[in-house]
Image (cartoon, rainbow, N blue to C red):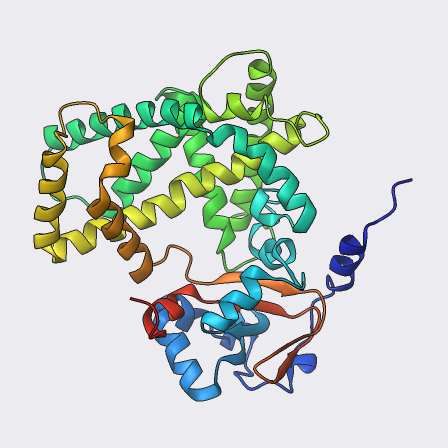
Amino acid sequence: MQQASGADLTIEAGSQRASPKSLAHLPGYRAFGPFDNTVAILKDPRAFFEASEKRFGPVYTASFLGSCGVHVLGPDANELVFADREKAFSSRLGWAPYLDRVFPRGVISMDFDEHRLHRRALSVAFKSGAMRAYFQRLDLGIAEWLDGWRAAPGLRRVYPEMKRMSLGLATKAFLGIEPGPEADALNSAFVAEVAATIGWVRAPLPFTAMGRGVRARAWLVDHLMTLIRSRRDGEGEDLLSELCTATLDDGRPLTGEEIADHMNMLMMAAHDTLASSLSTFVWLLAVNPHWQERLREEALGLGLTASDPTPFDSLEKLKLAEMAFKEALRLVPPVAVVPRRAIRDVHFKGLRIPSGASVGVAPIHTHYTNPRIG
């Protein structure tokens, strides 16, 4: 029988969630349940974090979706949690309350050695040759979407359009499935899964977002397993086909279940966070028209036009476009708060964060308030 590693035992020790009583020594908000901080955080996370820091300092308690935890703010907090030199924070346990029922085993929900092992295995799908193949499909697909918008002019809501476009492109480029009933069914299932992650009711009850998301996941995994079996010996250039050839360090190929979980998570990231980021980018260009002109001049200066394919090698030459997009991510990061779970006691800014405490890091706060940033 395989023995649990020291890291596994440490994670297990922190799997028991800290109670509000164990956090009572920390400053912060005390209400939870139906009177917690969820509405304020969702309404304006930046304002909530700034007001909270002024009131309590960079370490304080708050609750979200009925669960009490600790927020840590600022560059030092980012370094403490993301560098995690002491291996004191679990990503898997941090994301579990939001992702476990619909995205349980993606690479962002793995810790330490397991995370590194699977990230190396997934890297085969993101090498230069594979990226060129994805890019060609995406470039062609984007041109088709633009043609469709031009053919039906009128007012459009940007976020829903970006959501539909990014999901359709991801299905084609990453799963190798052309538009049609199968792609539509897959896309509907992915949308239901994402909606479940922030549903107010956390149990998969009938007629709830979580219930719909859990049913969608079961259907998706079954469908992905069928696709995986058909791609194992193929030579497709989509991301799923690449993952079907991926191996771990010992040469073992990823199992069908592992590929399905990774693919499910990658599809979520490929359309949900991307749609949010693109919508922000379009909005900021709309309110800063001089930057529209600068980016247009840069593209034309490289001989790029909307009617011709975009050469893959030209991407690294679009310096202003890269700068503008990164600034959009700074101003409105698609993930305002990143969750972790402390798996041992941690001392930060003179305060003890107990083992089992949910810990939230807020990049959006650092992006606006740190004088060393931009």
